[in-house]
Amino acid sequence: MTTIVIFIFVSLTFSVIHPRAQFPQEKKNFVSFFSGGLSTLPPHSREYHFVNQKMTWTEAQSYCREHFTDLVTIYNSNINQLLLSISPRIDDSAWTGLYNDRYSWKWSMEGKLFYVGSTHEFLIWANGQPDCVKAKEYCVALQGQTQMYDRPCGDSYPFLCYNAKNTSYILVMESRSWSAAQSYCRTYHTDLTSIRSKEEKSNITLTLNGSGVQYVWIGLYRDPWAPWSDNTTSTFTNWMPSQPDNGNSEYCGPMHLMSGVWADGSCTDRHYFFCFTGEVQNANSVKSCHHVKH
Image (cartoon, rainbow, N blue to C red; front, side, top):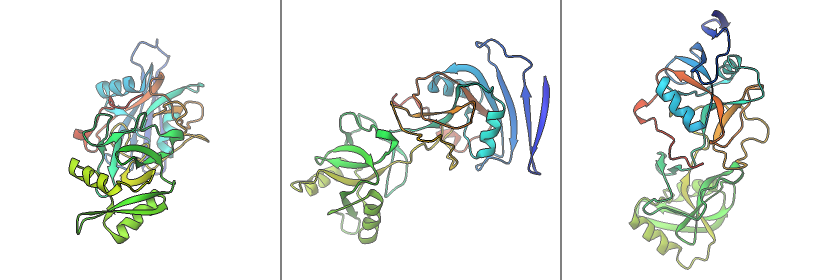
């Protein structure tokens, strides 16, 4: 077994360990390197592993969490290139920790992630929603006063503001994009409305009753492709052209092993994968992705 030491910049060193031969696929094979100072989030050191077995995204996540720490998060182009350098140059792909959780949402007023599944007590998705058509629907509008649809945030609809001073709901009939509606509500009231209880839902239903609007923006939105499997976030992306497109329920992100570019793919596809060993932020809140529907 040979060790190649690669120096990148002055203060960073990487050890890349290559096995002499490729073992049968059923064995737990991996190659590793150690990074110092590359991560945009603490800790400053992680060990990365390429696993030469094909699994679904969820199976790969479970494997990484059992044998290492988690699926890898790619914070910058250096890590992306180094992962590419320790994997075979083949026309295939490898899972990373990138996934698009269509059931994790935030309220504009709070900014805290929470789970909005199909059996939520008072937040009701319309049939087949959320579907994230063409990977462009990250904001929520109400239709028919009660049912929620994910819609492109740039679409223009009337919107519902909330005023905390007098606990009132204000329907603005002027059509605006979600972000423009948010700015308006924050300027003249408190924010886009939230639905956090049955009482709030009842008040909103009364406000919309008889309005005749087809869609109305509320304050529910999500950040696509965040967080990664280890519950950290990264601003770096390396999508191939026209990706992501959510062509067929594609909510997980593999890396192409010839080029290093990313695509969205079906989480039930079977690929090689990258794990890491090291500490993670908010380790106690790292969530399993079993609830992601594929």
